[in-house]
Length: 299
Image 1 (cartoon, one colour):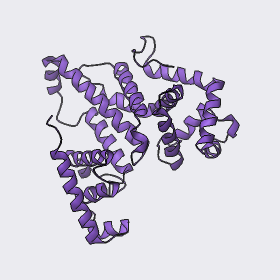
Image 2: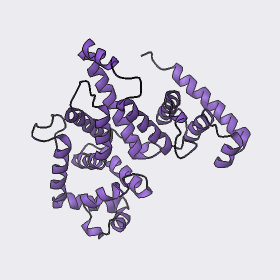
Image 3: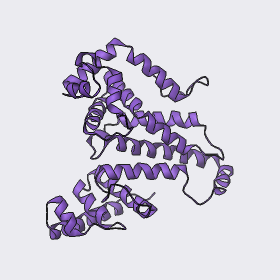
Image 4: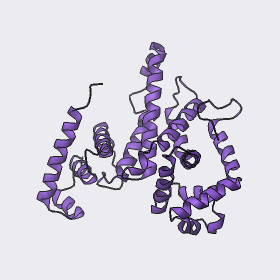
């Protein structure tokens, strides 16, 4: 198993190493047997076999990855979410099977990890692509093992990406602070347009918000992508994760405080309630969110 506590060797990058290790896992008969047993136990074997054109008895890492990475590259279908949540439940354990489950989650998320890594490489200095890639993979592995994601509403892949990006951004921010004034001056030379790090973070927040049903439309407009809107969505997502807000509470806030608010009557019709009840839900939700922010320790 890949040792994530040590940097990648100079002769091969972290993602090359992951792919090489994955090939070895796919050839391991014991791993095949474990995958089949997990899928049968979780009542997912028949569905995975169907979408991968396989027999249940032949299911292994390759078929599991195919189910986790639909051909269009988007982790959006119900089976993908169910398989990923099942793996995340196992990854939250403390035995060897938990490590294997987390390793499969990492492999499934490599495309997202590569995008995050590219977004954090700075043209004016800082860590290399491979160094940030190693940091991203380590953060992804840690988040997968945390036991937080599979209980969270919304798409598990989007939540994984969001938490991983937060870890990476925090570590890189600390690293830049330690480097001192030279790097700070270099950063000031960049233009005022959002950089790749900000774009990557915005993408992760939008994806998580869409998965949680906080976006009134399928695609966020340019105006909706503003910093204030993203900050509101992030606050609501955090409150939902902590249990301060229910999913319906989060939608009541996010749908109303938008550049194109959803009318209360429309929102009520969507959710099977009345406009008055929806307004009261929003008012209570805003009060709880405000109170929770006031209780936060100063940074």
